[in-house]
Image (tube, rainbow, N blue to C red; front, side, top):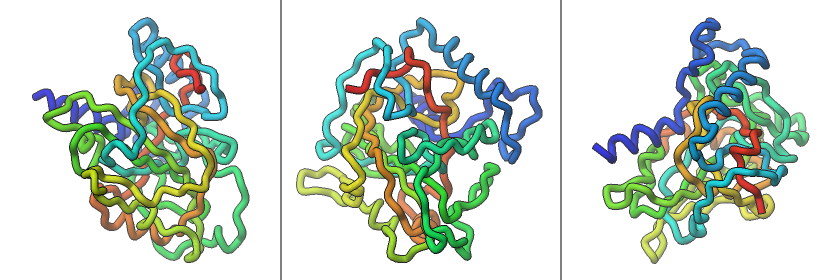
Length: 294
């Protein structure tokens, strides 16, 4: 029963759930129209109310260029990912986090985490932006398929539990450890129509080391020193409530270019059963819900 409850809660961190604030505004999850600024403001207000004085730990995602945070809930940082097990890989359409290289706001989205987040702020060539001939990782949440020039944020999730990589955050839990430490190695990619760009299959390759730990071996090592901070699980189901899960984040500040065709192939078949980009949680701006970045 306990494992089932944890699995349900953890999985909800990756799935978009209808938000209470939209109950009377006529928006459907698949709607294309962006919600008003007042809706997002109301979500932030409700989040503040629902977490005030309740002891929630620091939340995610955040602007990694802004170091201030006043949340007083302290937890030990997870070990280095090399001492943990890779348990899941998934991605969000548009970056959940914000940094100088991915700072273009995609908009408020449809109110359920789709068509929001942050996009690559650099420039691509006309060739890189050329339309791809096939639908890539097509979603049915109102945001369609991925296109050349789109931004994705990939989460390589690690756990201290003895597990094998698999679908959802449920793969990071075990019967033996109900409260494993979690770390997310994070890389933002921009999709380009260029066969010479990085291959997503290689970027998501993992293997079992001699010490018996599963490791993602293709994460780029040239996209800047990761910004580490104490946070939580993400996903739009937490736009109005605090996430109770403690996560150590390592977010790389620079983007890498990936061949859009290879992302499409990965969505067609992968061990994580991922076939489209997940929605994004509103950027957490309330300093009382953020940790200090050292």
